[in-house]
Length: 66
Image 1 (cartoon, one colour):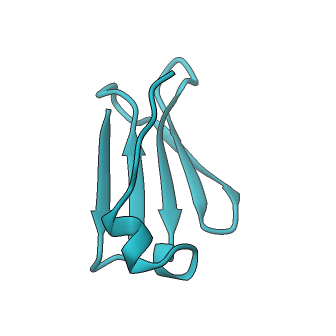
Image 2 (image 1 turned 90 degrees about the horizontal axis):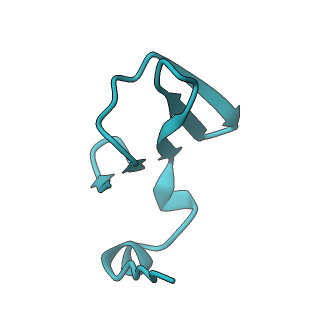
């Protein structure tokens, strides 16, 4: 899994695997899902991330495995 914050485009992107993206769908304003050829979600993109979270929160993202 890869996570990318792009300050130029103001996006946060979670890539779950490296399968080829064949379709994308905006499921809510500013939230886009990427699908592979088996209709599995393989990526999630959040647009305008600076309006959703602060820069401090982005700089200190924490992950928890259960």
